[in-house]
Length: 76
Image 1 (tube, rainbow, N blue to C red):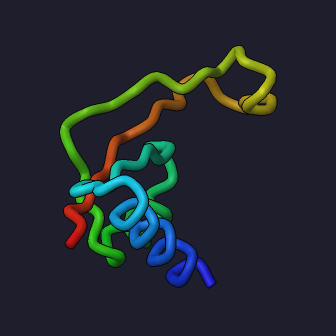
Image 2: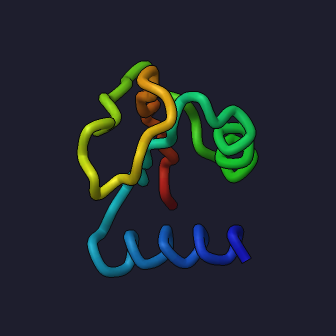
């Protein structure tokens, strides 16, 4: 199901917006999730972004060292 959802999101990005690249952020500590997206063709960039630890919209962080890595994939 995840594979199909990603494929549809990518297809929509191309057809509706003319996107050439898809970008996503993934919590850096989620190594298995990063590996999953790498198998789907996404690559880590050198960019990181802060995790909104104190923003209640993102839940109650159980640790204070969270941050995002940026991944991207070229779209056909």
